[in-house]
Image 1: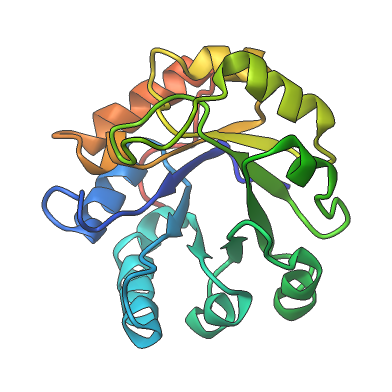
Image 2: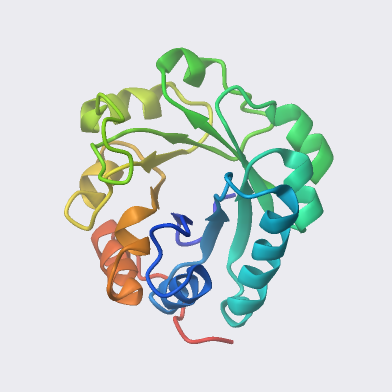
Length: 213
């Protein structure tokens, strides 16, 4: 089952204003309850240390914290799940992390959608739905029509990724997306809480109680 709300914040420390943990905390204040650490340029030990810092910083909000990378690294970090790169082995990840873990996979083609392991995956990310400043030249964009085709073919919920903003969030939902994934728009935001809150409102979700427990 996807976290609620089903809006995934993917990290990028190079884009984060004021530090990665601070952006994450502010996003949580705006309603974020699902964050994935995506810092593949760091050595494994540094990723694990950064993950621990992120866990402690956001503890009051109790978000689901996952990790972009191999399943063994997610296990070593004590993550709540893993997001696998294209071609990743979802079955092996599920076996390693257990039934309660979130297991996702990056997908870019319809052939990959049709080959997705519906028994092991909780979701797939489909990208690029729109062109994005975070990855210039990454495309061509699928658009909402492409997203709809992927959603119709997928055996698991589809998370729309790339170029997602409050202005197009509802069109992704209407095209069949079960959730959204964002990175640059929140990482670069002067007010991450307001940016995430706007995404929630556009998605049509009331979101969680924004106050820490």
